[in-house]
Image 1 (cartoon, rainbow, N blue to C red):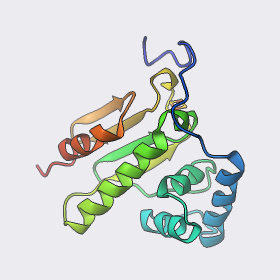
Image 2 (spheres, protein in one colour):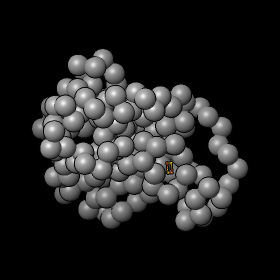
Image 3 (cartoon, rainbow, N blue to C red):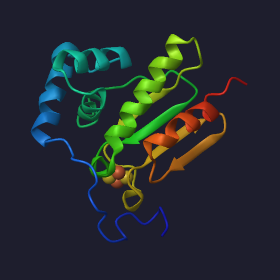
Length: 160
Ligand code: FES
């Protein structure tokens, strides 16, 4: 099935519980209360997650529902992660893994990467989906599993 044919396949079985839409908008409001201009940092999104006692992925997903919230892109390597309907197949678990790896790389002084949540990457039959952009080019990661993310990050963030 071509990734260019969204929704062309049968419905995917739900393996993970998606967030309640009301919770998404509650956290969106928390972000905008702290950052009325919508300009956030990875650190501030994670601080809000700690304050709200929710996983970081929930706050990242909330940031994606409002186009006025801008997550910074400052590193060469970027992972765009679908936090829309891909939640039902584990995209939030994946996003939390990216956050964990980003934080550990920064604390170890290694090359970091950015995380950008988006509501759909137009590859829904291959959920959960991420797209990377790095020195190696742009790559789709269909049916991405949390256990594979550390290897992907290691390869795409390798110091050249
Ligand atoms: S919902 Fe379309 S790619 Fe995730």
